[in-house]
Length: 364
Ligand code: KG4
Ligand code: ZN
Image (tube, rainbow, N blue to C red; front, side, top):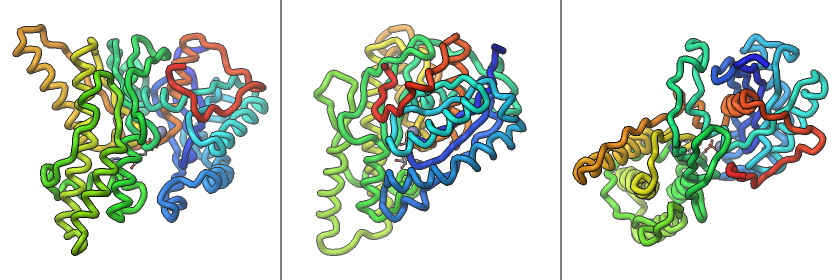
C-alpha cells in the first residue's frame, strides 16, 4: 500500500457523530455532528438518545466527509472505526455502518481505540501543510495526557501503537468533575468551557481547595474529593444568600485551578521518575488554555529544579492539537491512528468478529 494511506474514519463513541478522511496525518475533512443541544436537557449524555441521533446522522455525515475531501468511496484505501471505549449503544452504530461500507466497497476495516485517537490527535496537520513529512518526528519516550469527560490517563510509550497506562483516575474524569461542579453552579452542560470563561474573571486563590493524593507514590488521579469539597463549600457559601457574580467567577477559577493543579502535581512526579522526551495533551479538556499554561509551567519548574540540583536539564517538547476541533471527539484522530497501523503493516480487523468494546483499554 502507498505510504500515506487514504482512510475514511468514523467515531460514534459518545455524543458526537463524526466522519473524516485523512491521508496519513493530513486532514482532508473532519465533520462533526454535535448532539450537545439534544443532551443539554438531561445534563449529561443519554445513551439511547445518542444512539438514535447517531442512526440519523451517520449517513449524511459520512457523505459530507467524502464530499469535502473530494474523495469517492472507491478511492479510499481503508475504513476505520472506533470500537471502544465508549457507550455501547453509540459504538454499535458506527461499527455497523463501517462493516457495511467495508463489505460494499471491498475495503479493509480497522478497529481503532478511541484513546489512541486522542493520543495521536497532536500529530494531525491541516491540508495546507500537505504531508506528515512536514511535522517534526516525535522523539520517544512520549508521555501522553488524555484528559476528557470520560478519561484522565497518563500514557507512556516508546513507539506509536504500544501504550502503557502509568496512571489514571480512580473515580471521575477531570472533565466529568468540571461538568459536575458546573452543574452545582447551574452553568449548563458541558460546563468545562463555561468554567474556563468564567475563571478569567475570577481569582484562583479566592477559595482554597485540597490537593488530592499527595500521600500516594503512584501516578493515579482522583477528582471525586474535589467534587465533594465543592458541594460542601457551596452549601456553606449559599446558606444565607445566593452567590454573587464575582463569587461564581472566583469559584470557577479556584475549582478549575484545583483540578489542573492535581494533574500537574502528578505530572511533576512522573517527570522526576521517568525520562520523558515529549509531552502530548489530548481530549476535550485539552482545549483549556489554563491547563496548557500550567503544564508548560510544570515543565519549566521541573527544568529549573534540575538546574538547581546540578543535573543536566532535560529537553521536553510539549505538543497540543493544532486546532481545538481536534480536542473534542472527532474521526480525524481515528483515521490517523488507522493510518499508522496500516503503515506498520498491521492486518485489517476481521469484520465477522468485530464487536464494540465499551471498556477497551489503550494498553491492551
Ligand atoms: O473528549 P471529549 O469531547 O469527550 C469525551 O470523550 O469525554 O471531552 C468532553 C469534556 C467535557 O467534560 C467538557 O466539559 C470538557 O471536555 N471540556 C473542557 C473544555 N472544553 C471541553 N473542559 C475545560 N475547558 C474547556 N475549554
Ligand atoms: Zn473522547
